[in-house]
Length: 383
Image (cartoon, rainbow, N blue to C red; front, side, top):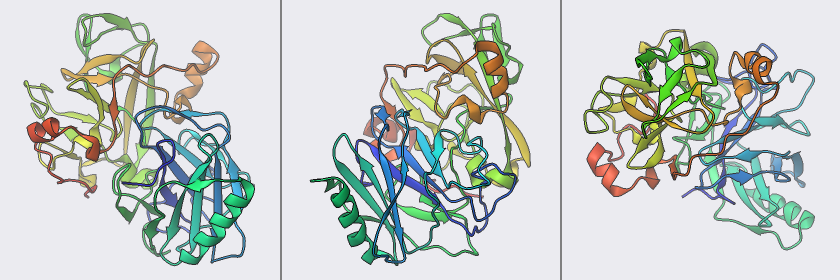
């Protein structure tokens, strides 16, 4: 089980100089040596207030460690991400990575780097280190415990292994919250949406998600009709997003009871409602009837859509219960964010529905595993 504090873990590191599959983390129009990024992930069951949390860094077995970011006011829901992007003259915004912030100081990363995430509420921290940086852990512990009296380490020190500058740009957990690390294309700030062609139950029948309009009435799982407040659109480009763009395909009938009524494609962190639980689609993968859509089947560019209603509702997508928009990642990750601001003036917070969320396959109840044939297959994204 990953070392966590308050449910938060360090989930992914993008390194510069960059290898293949990098993301333009600072949105300056190119991938370059200023696109270092650290993604955090809420692996717990409850929302986490990150105000005042700290990200520390040291490398090359240096004699000191540096506080590179004090986190601002932000709440990360269960299954949510928060990305710290390297500061610098080229930083533009966080559009390409979702919720997060610019670091306070610049940093670079390699297999000799060690990171610590400090939680002030618990006065504890977690450590993550490269396979060539074990001596740096002592430096890091000394620095944090000097800055925060009586601070203690939560869990064991994790190692993300090694990587090559000529290989993939990111070292990341095989799936969000996994114990296992891999090098791969970066997946920072993945979108949580429906693919075009998804049929949403509306007041007068089913409507393709891309055809829904603000004010249209959609049906909820409990039989109500609620108006659409906004449709978020995000264009995915394989050139920039790589495997991060890879959605999950749920074959007709895969969830039981004939649902979905036809193949349903959603992004990896989109929540499906199964046995009263909100479960990220990637956690449901069984390698057969629920699996990654191969990259070879995806066009270079495609658009995904999210349906926002007044609350965090359960609507029907190809007949299957599925969540509406929850404000993680933030709306600024959508291409039509300016439209939202023109309509409503400012963002609003949507309280998460009162259902437990499962974002990692290890948390799935045995009954769901057995019924859906989930036995460890399909963990890695395939081409």
